[in-house]
Image 1 (cartoon, rainbow, N blue to C red):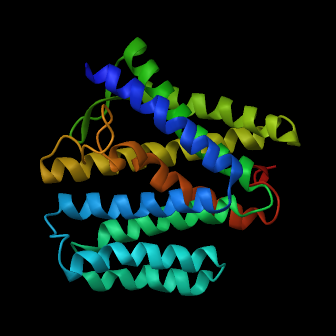
Image 2: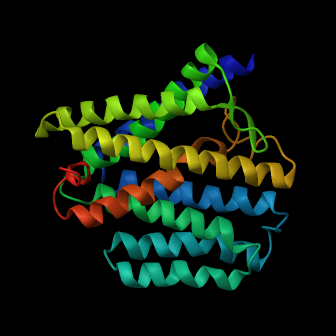
Length: 256
C-alpha cells in the first residue's frame, strides 16, 4: 500500500470514532481523551530517550491518567496542581507530560460546558480547516517560506490560506450552532488558526532538534499522535482561555 492509501484508510477508521465519541460525550469521550494523553506522553518520552518500562516510565504514564480522572470529577484546582507538579520529572522529561495534560484538560473542560459540543467541534474543525487550507494554498500559490529553518515546506501564502479557511469555517459553525452568523466567530476561527500553526511549528522544531522525521508510527500514513495533534494541543488551551473569559456563552462570542 502507498502512504496515501494508508492515510486514507486510517482516516476512514479514526475520524468516525472521534466524531462519535465527541458527539455522545460522556465516558466515551473522556476515555478517548485519557488514551490520547497517555499516548502523547509515551510518544514524547520515547522520542527523548526516556525508558518507559521501569517504575519511572509507569509513573510518567500514570500522571496524566490521574490528573485526567481528577479533572473529570470537576476538581480543577487539584488537577492543575498535579499538572504543575509534573516539572518534578525534570527539565527534559516534563515537557510531554505538561503538554499532554494541558491539552487534555482543555478538551475535557470545553466538552463539559453548556455549549461544549459546539465549542469542541469549533476547535477541532478550525484546526482541520487551517491545516487543509494551508496545504492547498501553499501548493497552489507557493511563494516565500514561512519558517524555512524549522519547516521548509510551509509558505506564507499557505499560512494565510489556513487562517482564511478557519475564519470561514468558524463563522459557519457559529451559524450551525444556532447563534447566527457573526464576525466574532470568524475572528475566533482566525485566532485558533494562528495558535494551531504555532503549535505545528513548535512540534516541527522539536523533531528537528531531535533529528527525526515523524514523532512515531502509531497511525499508518500519518506518523505519530504528535504529528496529528500538534496544532490541537495549542489551539485547545487557547480556546479554553477564551471560554474562561466568555463565561457561560460560546467562546466565539467573546469579540462581539
